[in-house]
Length: 460
Ligand SMILES: Cc1ncc(COP(=O)(O)O)c(C=O)c1O
Image (tube, rainbow, N blue to C red):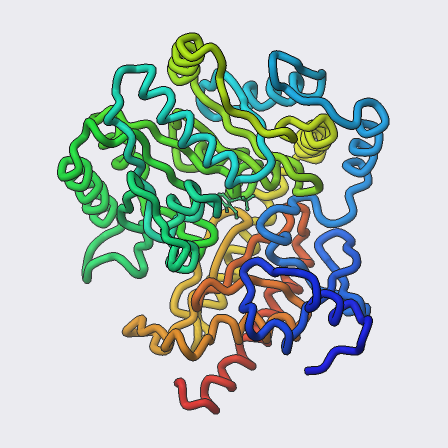
């Protein structure tokens, strides 16, 4: 496709390096330039309107035109456009936000460290774990376990936790000390005849065997998303986290809950940790913390870990870590207002009301000839497309059927994300029942179109 000179598309191609994009084909396909948003919809430069069924990147929980957040940002910028928390300085918004997060944490937490992205917060968690274990006289307890298909970000260390091939291949990752355990996807991972509980038991045994093989004294922490997001929306099998936590406790391994997607209502509770009874030692928050209106992330740590940091910083003379924009007053003010709105608009109750409509709609779509599994909880879900429902046979990756299905959804006016051949759903939490039905109707038409395409290409 040629793009008119000086069009936004031509200027984009000439200037922007796009994340998660095929850089070779982008100049031909060109960008889709989004210019506005309202509620759960966004519009492109040609005036086409789409249901943003991914809330952008699992993040715009309050939709695309929440004036109360705009007001919070404007007021904060007028009051104090920048201040930091280095060298003991502080400001009211960081203090209030930290207090609010500690008060709502799903397990006792002692302190909050602010950063600007999920990756930075996970990276910080790793650094603090290493620092704390040095303080605790455990210099060899440094390895970190995360799960195949888990997503924790893209910085050097957080991408080392992200065991997805595209995030590691040819970036020379993972770094040393990062090891992977099983993905808890029952549909793909269970043995014939295995129950969810037995699958969970086997995964916990595999984890224990891995810890024993590596040496329990070398394993510091385990990172997990309560529901895996970017790995294809994987809801853990029954009893999974209970059994995993038992193993971690036995070997004194810290649990870091990556709540970057699940936090703030997505799974039908304020935190995914509540939904799955996880008692973490650290919690990572981002995305819906500010409804993504402004970059901010937070790492909460418990008291024993904080005390270890105190010991080490006393020894060294300073805790040598921090980001210029961490705890930015405008970002903190927007996050505080976001939390206010979650409370005043009863967002978690709303998710509990409309989540089942999304889930039952996805279950109905499981009878579509292309869908092998419908899965999800609250307002997060996925449809996994398969070549053969009975045998669960996947399409050849080269066919790119998931991408084609996402493109068909886009033609129907819906943005979804394909992860391999799974189509992910994570709409703004404010979506209403009618909009969910509209979304499901459009997706069904897109699946029909994709099915016809698969037939005409001899794929089914
Ligand atoms: C669970 C999880 N953790 C961490 C991240 C990384 O966040 P960021 O893209 O803000 O660095 C993401 C991003 O999608 C995520 O889904």
